[in-house]
Amino acid sequence: MIRPIAIILAIIALSFISGPWLPWWTIAPISAVVCFLLRARPVVAIVEGFLAGLLLWGGLAFFQDQANEHILSSQIGVLFNGLSSLMVVLVTGIIGGLVSSLGAWTGASARVLFQQPDK
Picture 1 (cartoon, one colour):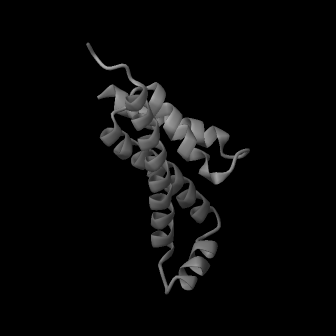
Picture 2 (picture 1 turned 30 degrees about the vertical axis):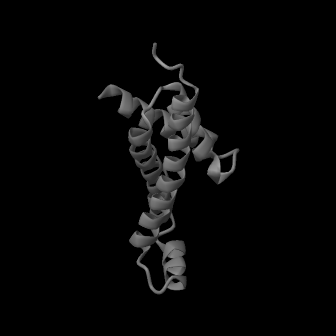
């Protein structure tokens, strides 16, 4: 039970730290490296990566949305047929989760690919 939590926290921490300097999509390679090094199983890595991306991007979007009193998210919601500001934050978190889960799946699958077969 400790390994999935460690993987999720490692992805969140490394992505949060690198966020101000690197592009938005760096959560994918970070998830890949974390899942490769911590030996995540591919199916579990998808869930771990999704949760990490959802929590990080959704949390950051939520706090930014609260800081500017829902002004930007309300305007973006109008562009997308009247989505509420909460739905815009949720969609942001889901996109982050999908990007992170694909990276995590790639890293875990690479680990399986390079693993030596048992004799």
